[in-house]
Image 1 (cartoon, rainbow, N blue to C red):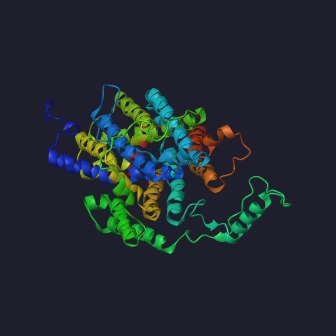
Image 2: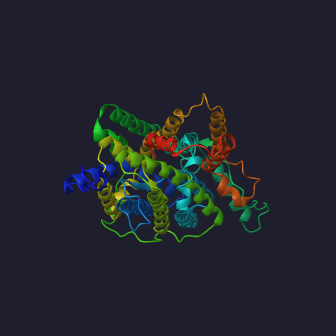
Image 3: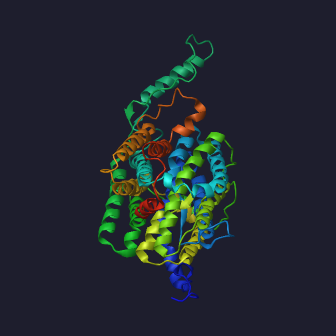
Length: 496
């Protein structure tokens, strides 16, 4: 190849091929991209219309940030490699924790404010983070990604059977007891009644099995989705195999519609086209502790992105220098800032799409530019977002087991490359970090006697595990190590 020849990364393919390959990238990431707004929107107890807006804004921002990352914007922004940007699962557990302690629009505003603050800080610290890769060898990144997957599995399992609280909780209040309490309350409040008034806050504890919990028909649909994904992954080839999760969700949606568990009323009512506007769902509020929590998440995410960019540079034959690395990480921060402004979430490079680059051998960044344009257009179509929101949680649960389990499996795969035999301290790092990460999952009330201000910081197992892994690695191994091990770990991470 002569010096004047176009590098494969900068190659502009024919428009029909560009569109088809771009659509393939979108389909590979689509299930993961829409999962986060569904999880967080429902955790916040938003209305179906608001969750639809959340999905719409998410797809729109995915497209905008993908365009900036792949095309580049000034010397400061964009790694200029074939990168698709999407919401990181690492941010889900902290956001669900924030939603649990403060649901509704107030909680949404606090989350969006934390995201905006973390986005600004991430842009400022991008050059520093780009030099921190040695603090995140495979023993650290593998542990963090494994804990992310394990933490998210709880959400997928609750999608299948029902949430611990609310209308699908395992137990419900006995109707006879509820009627008795209502009668006593009415009698006590009657004029001239001798009965003492009920103490404020008295409620009945759920004591009878809830027929909506673990309904066999719903569990059957979730199992069908799971089996469909496994069969497609086993027997299909190429593109169809790559979108096994998406096809499984479609199959589940069709069966849910036939059995009457899914209807299209919201899709019919949704407009065909609508603009995505800033602060459409909630006005952001800025809590320093929540901003710090989300910033810690972003540092972990940016370290993952660093390894991903370096791995992608090797795959495409384009060296990623410090300047390009900082520009890519700065775009992670800008994408997160844009996400907060448009009332959506933190953004990072989607590693399953990095894997797709390796599978297809197509290195042109303009394929991802085409994917970004498709995502922007999808974000302007509310009917599509309403269709996704209409999916019953059991359908998503079957797919969630695969999506979230693959995240955990990715962490295990990275850890498989750690030399535990010759580095005896690495086992301590993994063991203690995973144990600490499990505390909020197993004992969610462990923080009840701790200062309330630090609750958002410690109720995410992912954050606790990340801090433990980094500090323990420094304690046992120091800051030694080169970037090559982290790059190899990034190549293993084909599921985000």
